[in-house]
Image (cartoon, rainbow, N blue to C red):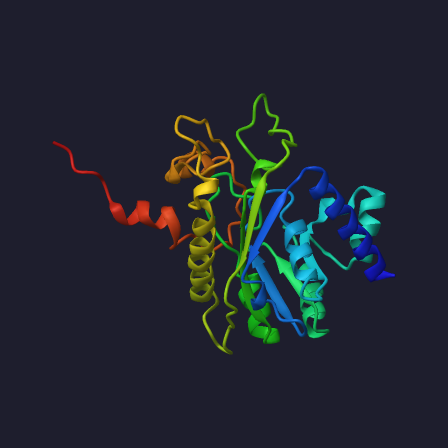
Length: 272
């Protein structure tokens, strides 16, 4: 019954991507093991990120159990489907239950999908990360596969609110979505969770920027591109503006990676 719900959901997802003529290109899929516990730790750039990850992982014979905000379970029909597919609701005010549920799934040998940023990044950079991924990997021995995707944010993501309203979905057909699975890594017993999480941030940044700088994802000259990061020539909120929009848990590890770290180490500009 559980997998029947999941297969139906994936079938509907495939129909939606075909209807929108979405071209999904996946690299590194061989890094996803075909069996045994694994954590897929993904960047979060849109409301739709789980679909391409789930579709790709199914090609490796895996049904990914994703962590997701608990309010996704509020609509009765959707909540039932999420539960039947064994996804994990996360209450940010009390995350212990989600941790225990994810740990139980890993001990069963499941694939668990997590978003260590605990929210979509308004700047489309890798924002502060939670230590939960590292803790789960250290406790269960599960490998962690870093995952990044790009292009899907053009369909439905966050953006500058207008009159308090976020941007609506953009159902323009023919979008290209790139998905990359990085090399697996593990957390050794006794390893420092903060240091490991910082290393994960660097890995995710390398994967994400590798996709963002592909020629087909760069904005055209003169194009207004609120879907592309400011530090790479787009018009998404820069780090300072994003700081007022992102809701980041206080316990998150602050970036020692990406443009945020570069801005701190650059220091003040010389004046003449």
